[in-house]
Each structure stands twice: as structure tokens, then as C-alpha cells.
Amino acid sequence: MFSYCTDPSSLEGLVWLSCYLTSGTHLLFYASFGTVLILLAITAPVALLFGYGGAMAARSSIAPLRWFGKLYTSMVRGVPDIIFFLFVPIALDQGFEWLRHQALCDSSQPVWQGNDFVVCDAAKLPLNTSAAWVHDAYGIFLAVIAFSVVFGAFAANVLFGAMQAVPRAQLETAEAYGMTRRQVTRRVLVPQMWTYALPGLSNLWMILIKATPLLFLLGVEDVVYWARELGGAKTSAFSYPHPDWRLYYFLALLVFYLLMTWASERVLGRVTQRLSRGQATMGGDAQRKGAVA
Amino acid sequence: MSCTQTIIDYGLRSVGIGERLLPREGYDLCQQFTLIGSGLIWNLYFAVLALAMGFVLATVVALGKTSSSPWLRRPADAFIFLFRGSPLFIQFFIAYEALVLLPRAGVEVFGLTVQTSWLTKAWAGALIVLTLNTTAYTAQIFHGALMSVPRGDVEAADAYGMTGWTRFRRVIWPTMLRLAWPSYTNEAIFLFHATTLVYFSGFPAFQQRGDALYYASYFADRTFNPFVAYPIAAAYFVVATLLLIWLFGCVNRRLNRHLPGRGGRVRYRPLLVR
Image: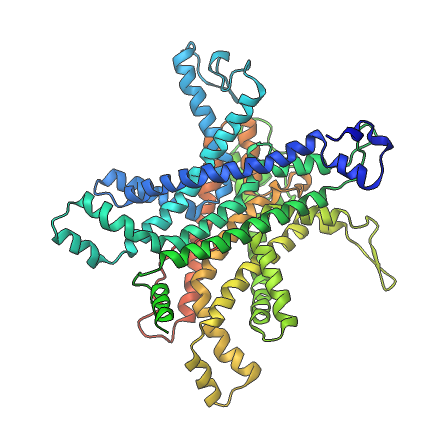
């Protein structure tokens, strides 16, 4: 990156370090922190949407929809999330390829042949001819879906509980005013539920942050991947030879995650305070008492 | 090959008893059920031992956190922050890399050579990480419960002339447990599910002795079919989780047995505090 970095073998000390830390692969490593943040930024709203859908389905008056909602909200209670992270991407990938196989190929050929999953070249996702970034983007796309499904189920749990926690009297009042079921939901239930949902959702955000290194398991080139790649011992064949430094790279990741959770905790604490203003909860009462005194 | 033979060959494969090689053909339901079930032994081993040791340590750390002396409070706070603030996955990697750096030949302590190579094995290294991790989460739960022990209970103990250790053991600690138990049940379930991470996080599966998910992913990789192996593993975990909830429910009933009208069946609600 710097002009004096052309011949790394002649450098020493801090100069060597400054060149080492700005090498091309290190820039990719720094960019992978962006991948983690992007994943968080996309997954959080999508998971919230899935969760909202799941919670509404679980409250539905249509029996099959309700069963589906209940099943979705309870699936993360008994099954480790890591199983879903391994299962969902492969299952989705095969699902997409099977659909494309039916549409694009000679569909008389079975997809399952012995212990192989075979589709014709035209049905492959992404296509063999696609650029490398398409493969990467597809991997991240599958990862985002897997995260959203799992955390959507967690969020559905939280939101369902929050909807149940809204005082029944408020909903009955709204019904007494002649509002329809839909209006009650939109005008009373949803605005009221957030204060009950927030403690659960902020915990969920913390769990989501701490689940991001699992991207590595899904084959995405994330922070863990690069920490392992860059930290591993490099022989003199490389421009920057060094012994096994993986411990230091992982300590850097540890600091990154500690900062993330610490900052989140502070922000969420503020938001909780703001949302419990004027609410008929313990937090709201405490604020009122503080204001009087 | 009959299913009985498969069970004899692979039923205890995860602890190194039976066939040396993993199945290389067939991959029928019997093989998958047997091998994934045998892997569950490791999940139970990690969960039971980590929870048992974590429970004791967490009580100590929670007491340290309530202490008025900064020499006890600060380290307890730092410990809880470190392990609750970072992902378990990263903790596994750091622990493994740190343990690998220990000298192969062992460390000299007062003239005795202490072997260190066993620490890099999953059964010891991962167990230490899981124990410390659950200690931090549990200590946070116990600390919250200690703070909510009713003042009246403590005053009643004082009135009976109980002090120090007696007061703690007979009044404060049981009340703390009673208050903390629903959250602790939740933490136990999370920890049990987290044991599936061990063999995906740097700790190698020595001679392919892995946990349930390790074998499930082995089958999924070999057959290119995730729709059989993963649901089998999931089913095992659902059953084990239900057992765990039942067991913790029994303890909860015992803790609350003196209270009229309470302590009936606890409805398990994942509190998502982790």
C-alpha cells in the first residue's frame, strides 16, 4: 500500500508491521468486518419481519395457519440453532436447483442418483460460468436466509409473548368502540406491544451479534475465515513470513465483539428508557417517580 | 447387514468402541440413527459436566459480584463481561490456539513435569471453555436473583440468630435458587444446544469420535442429502431437551414445595437471555 513496501524482506520493526497490516489480504480481512455488519443490517429487519409473520400466524383464527405459526415459534426451543445453520443453506440450494432442474432440464432424469445430487449444467446455481463474486454473493444470500429463518423464529417467540402481554382490557376497549379485528391489531395491539417486546428483542440482538462468527460454518469468507488464513504460520515463500499468529488474530476478533456488545448494550439501555416513558409498567412508574422527586 | 449388527458396531463408536472406520456405503436409516445417537453421548457429557461445574463456580462468582470489596467485585465483573460479551465460537478458537501454544513436553512446576497435551483434546479443552461460559451466564442470573431475595427473609433469619454461612446456606441460597430457577432452566437449554459447536470450532474430532451434529454432517456430506441426517439429529435434540425441561421442572417443584399454590408445573418460555 505504501511506496516503501515494495521489498518486504528488507524491512524491519514498525515499518515492516505497517506494510504487513496493509497488505492486500489484510485489506480483505478488514473488509470482512463489513460483511459481518452487512449481515447484521440485513438479517435484523428480515428476521423481525419473519418473526412478526410467525407471531401473527400463531394468533390466527385459521387453524392450519395457526399450527404453522406455533410450529415455527417453537422449533428453536428444542433444536440447536447450529443444526438449522447447517441444514437451511443446503436445503435451499437443493430446492432451488431442483426447481430449475424441473423447468430447464430433461426432467425425466431423477435428481437423486445413488448418493449424488445431479442436476444438468443449466440448472446449477450459480452457473459454472458465473464470476467468482456471484458465487460469493449467492453464499452470503443463503447465509442471510438461514440466519433470518432461525432468528425469525426467536423473534416470533418474543413478539408472540409481547402480544399476549398487552392488557386484554385495552383490546376490549378498542372492540367496544366498534373497531374490527384488523383495526384493533393495527391501532392498539402493535403500538402497545413494543415496550413488552423490547427486553426480548434486545437480548435477541445480542444473541444475533454473537452468532455472526457462525458465518464461517456456512462457507462465507468472514472474519473467522480470514483470521485463520492470515494467522497461520507463513514460510519464507511468502512475502511476510511469520510464525503461528492465529491467537493474536482471534484476540483482535474478541475485542471487536466485546466492543460491539458493549456499545449495543448502552444504546439498547437508552431505547428501553425512552420506550417505557409514560407506560403502565414498572419502568414507566420509576420514571414518573423520578420526575416528581 | 442387520440393524442389530449395526447397533453393536456403531452404538458406542463416538467413544471409540466398535468398528474403527465410519460406514462408507449404504447409509441407511439404521446406520444414521445409531451413529448420530452415539454422538449424542458427547453432547450429554459436555452439557452435564459443564452445568455441574458451572453451577458451583457461578455461585462463587455471583457472590463475588455482590461483594462490597472491589478486589472481589471487579474480577467477577470483568469475568462476566468477557464471557458474556464475546461469542462462544471465538472463545473456542482462542482457547484452542492458546492451549496449542503450551509446550508439548509439559510444564515444569516445582520440579514436577505437568503434562499439557490432553488440554488440546476436545474432551478437556472444550469442556473448560463451556464451563467458563456457562459460569458467566449463570453468575449473571444468580446475581440478579441474589439482588431480589426479599429483605424480610434475611431479617427473619437474623431474628432466628442465624449468621454468616448458616444464614447463607439455609435462607439466602435456597431463595436465590428458587428465584433464579426459570432463567437457569433456559440457560441450561442454551448450553446444551451450544455443545453442538465443539467439533466445528477448531477442536479436532480425534479418530472421528464426534458429537451428534458431527456425524449428522458426515452423513449429509456423503449422501448429499440434508433431509435425513439433520432431522434425525434434530429429533434426538428435541427429545433430550424435553427430558432436560422435565428434570429441571422436578427440581423447581422441590424448590417451591413449601409455597402454597405455587411451584406447580412451570410453563417453559424461552427467555432468550443469553
